[in-house]
Length: 404
View 1 (tube, rainbow, N blue to C red):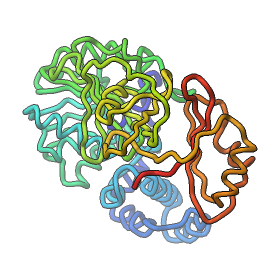
View 2: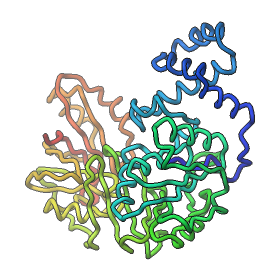
View 3: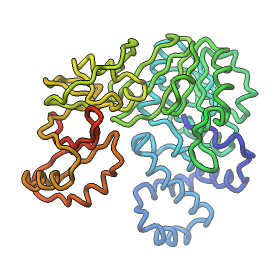
């Protein structure tokens, strides 16, 4: 799951931070965490002041910080797990969302993998998913605080027998005794996201080398990776969850050269077939917006073929059809109006339709949705979706509504 906090920095957490974390595992720390489970951040000052009358200040500070992290982690791990787990700020930010980690673990299990070396394991989210799939895991990270959290998480969720947590430099770990390798390099630095794969920590080239030594391997990478950077022997999978693109994964020992888009929940997987770009055709009655994973995987042609549709513009990933068809790979809309780019005409149309709830989407347009909403000032009981885009090279505004 999450990544090593920062391989480029000295990875020695202050002793005080480790001592504070260890204090959370005591009976007193556990009681504090239970009391803080549902506290409101707006009441933090009063809560801290009250708790410090009965508990050491350092423990209260650590417990409140951990309670805040658990509340943030619910979105990724669900309440049942998040309120039993332990997090670092980087661990919450960088962790794999639980359904995505479970999907990857299921793929490993389907390959017959019985053991995985999880390199850059962070607070252990991926290790948890792998262990729940019945796979033995070695979780490695060089950040001592992340290692402490991962070890505590395995114990808290009853998985300690399947998860060994080790503090080490991942580049120095012998993985030869494991069926598979999973690498989740750090893609954040002191200045935010890292876009150059060779600036990952460890670099993508090292991770690919580690993958090539194993019978099976998976490398978690940023979904914006250029397709030309994918090694020829790897399968590239783009994964979205609930419509949001979460990651790309390079699989080794599966299907060299394959390209897939997997949509969760499901999973629903669209496989590339090397189709040529869809033809551009006039706007039909229906417009389909492909899932982000489909777009990132360059599989819009496969989605268009499934819908028997074409593109509204050669450079825009909107599919148009004359008939509605269900598909898990795109969201469909019925288009009621096609206008040239003209704010006055659009405002008049929305006023006539009494549209007060307006969703604005854009692709191939420089106009910002919030800016447009401010100018339009929608009012009324009805709802509509406006697409700011191009059709056959010309700027257009499309008005419609989602298909049921």
